[in-house]
Length: 55
Image 1 (cartoon, one colour):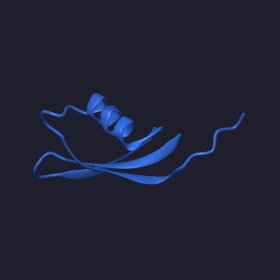
Image 2 (tube, rainbow, N blue to C red; image 1 turned 90 degrees about the horizontal axis):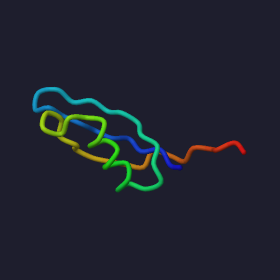
Image 3 (cartoon, rainbow, N blue to C red; image 1 turned 180 degrees about the horizontal axis):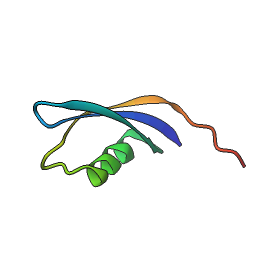
Image 4 (cartoon, helix red, strand yellow; image 1 turned 45 degrees about the horizontal axis):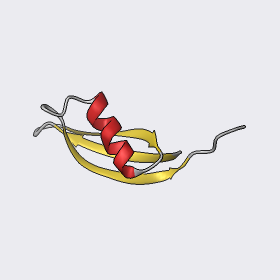
């Protein structure tokens, strides 16, 4: 899994969140699922780093 920083805006406010996903397309889909895209526009999805998974 990789960590992606997602930037969202509603036109007046802007915030960032972190989503773990295998790739940027999956991170974009997760962001669209968790946030109301009729209100929040996804501005960007950027790779933030890789997360370690303990076995």
